[in-house]
Image (cartoon, rainbow, N blue to C red; front, side):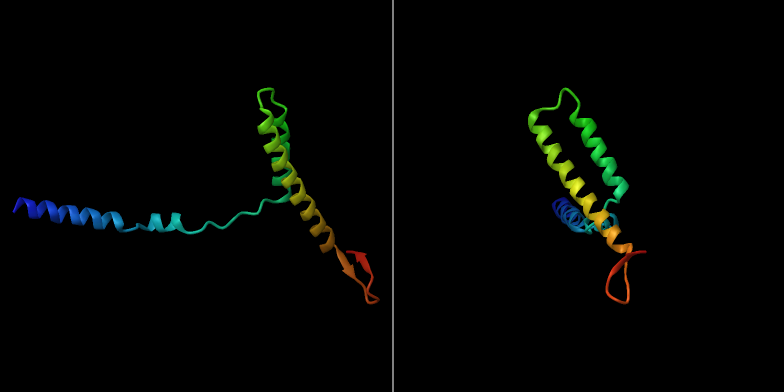
Length: 99
């Protein structure tokens, strides 16, 4: 009789382990990716530059930070281009003018 209770308890624990709580479900959902804004990108670039100037940074770390900084800079440039394009208005004759 005690064996059956232990088996039943073990089965229930195994079943409970397989269930996901609301919190588990929330954490397993893909998070919406936050696209950093222009100011956040500039802040990240500044942080990378500050970190690269530290004397204890290895050459390998410097290259990795350089690549990350370059990616941030390219993304910031694309954002600036998009802002500039959004500020242009097409006239009746098809030419572009600043808004």
